[in-house]
Amino acid sequence: MSSLLIFDCDGVLVDSEPLANQVLHGHIRELGIEVSLEESTRTFTGLSMGACVGLIEEMLGGNVPDNFVSRLRIHTARVFADGLRPVTGIETILPGVDGPLCVASSGSHAKIRLSLKLTGLHRWFPDDAIFSAEDVQRGKPAPDLFLHAAEAMGVTPSQCTVVEDSVPGVTAARAAGMRVFGYAERTPSRSLEAAGATVFSRMEELAGLLGY
Image (cartoon, rainbow, N blue to C red):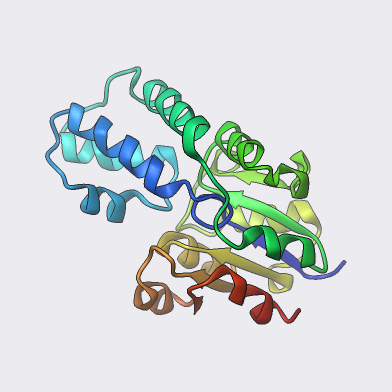
């Protein structure tokens, strides 16, 4: 099999992070936690829902309400339905990929599938090429999700290239022994580079990095 190209979803395939971060920030504020949108975005971007809840409970000094996650997911889905778009340039990249590709995201399977469907990107990613933090015990920055994706797709880690936009994602890919390109549209390039990524700032540049 040819080398595998693994895409993160949020911020790499779909321009979801500004929308999702605004929703999450609002729900955190409702709990009485005073935190800026910038700090919230910096803290939670790239993490699984379980990891986010763990950090929120540390900030809160107690458990979140039982319906916190369900309310957050419903609100996020409603906002996505109204305004989610593909990342600029990704629709010119995907048709040119020479080899297998998949998604490995910190989001739930439901969120990943919804995001891809709403943006029309689902045609490149069948169900058996979608991997979620729900599939493993430890989400990013642990390497488990990327290692799981590689095994399921029948390749070794050294045959994988990852496209990420968060420091936890880059850290996870490097820990998995994979080459990683860091998309620096919203994340500071120096942070991605320090984590071990080859950095690019326009999605159109990815074709050159991949050699096509």
